[in-house]
Amino acid sequence: GGFIPPIKSNGGNVGNVTSRIGGKCDDALDDSTKRCLDMLCGPDGELPEKLRNLEPRLIEHVSNEIMDRDPNVRWDDIAGLDHAKKCVTEMVIWPLLRPDIFKGCRSPGKGLLLFGPPGTGKTMIGKAIAGEAKATFFYISASSLTSKWIGEGEKLVRALFGVACCRQPAVIFVDEIDSLLSQRKSEGEHESSRRLKTQFLIEMEGFDSGSEQILLIGATNRPQELDEAARRRLTKRLYIPLPSSEARAWIIRNLLDKDGLFKLSKEEIETICNLTEGYSGSDMKNLVKDASMGPLREALRQGIEITKLEKEDMRPVTLQDFENALQEVRPSVSLNELGTYDEWNKQFGSLS
Ligand code: ADP
Image 1 (cartoon, rainbow, N blue to C red):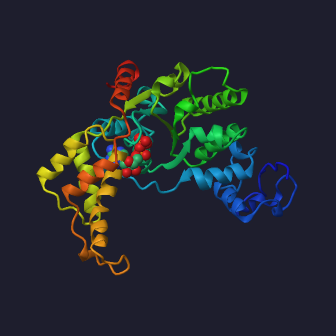
Image 2 (tube, rainbow, N blue to C red; image 1 turned 135 degrees about the horizontal axis):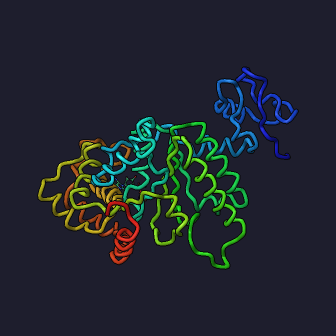
Image 3 (cartoon, helix red, strand yellow; image 1 turned 30 degrees about the horizontal axis):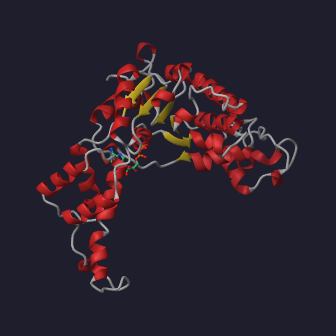
């Protein structure tokens, strides 16, 4: 079917807002789309200006797939990164909570870049920011805009910023932002990806100057690919490094404790931490997962059937389990990559 722009409803009648879309009747949209548009209507029962000329299915996609009502990450779930947490609290959480105080000289930047190796907690920080600032969280991977939404990325970006505008305060998290705002202008850069980039920068510009309570967070493992325009928009740039030895210990304890499996001594934890130099937070999680399979595998080896297995049949997770797991789970970041981050941080990072 052709594109049907959602237009304003007969005032006040919120439940029936889409009943007269472009002169057509309700049947043009299915129930879930209607419900979704209804929820975005203002008290006057009208769809906000920004959303009126967008395709309902894109608005629905943003509301259902990109918007996350309950990101469910707290600061306390994130190991280490005390410095980043402190900066973020001051730079973005307070301003989102108290826009009245953070104006004029104190007005914050509306763009934050989190850069560093993969699996170090950048997405977690984004979610935690939304949680702590009681903001709506929007997550999109920039590479999906170019791969999955071929030719429609621009429209989706408009829908994204439009819905965020209706859901303030809002945090828009753009993963792999380098693939959207990269400086590479090889012949590989198509017209469409240039338009997408332009649209994105326009949208950012739009709320940058205004009083909107929208924060854009970009995350990247390849900060060196960002061009000058992108850097200018992302005024705060925080390095999110690999976890320290203490942070790694914390991740192990935290994950095992949750399942009541933690029985390791201080010395054993220390040994594991020494063996996991260079592991990311995500690597640590995979390591703990693998190690925690040890007791289960052993019980099954002893002939107990999986269906008859009782919790008591399994011993606690041991250092040996971790040593075995270390053979399987290798660090995903190479040490020479780290140098690049340090360099970029020195040149462009905030508060290095
Ligand atoms: P990134 O966005 O930096 O690639 P994520 O935030 O998606 O990484 O982290 C992936 C997973 O790794 C998380 O869900 C979490 O289980 C674990 N993890 C990574 N960093 C940390 C950390 N600092 N503290 C606790 N868990 C972490």
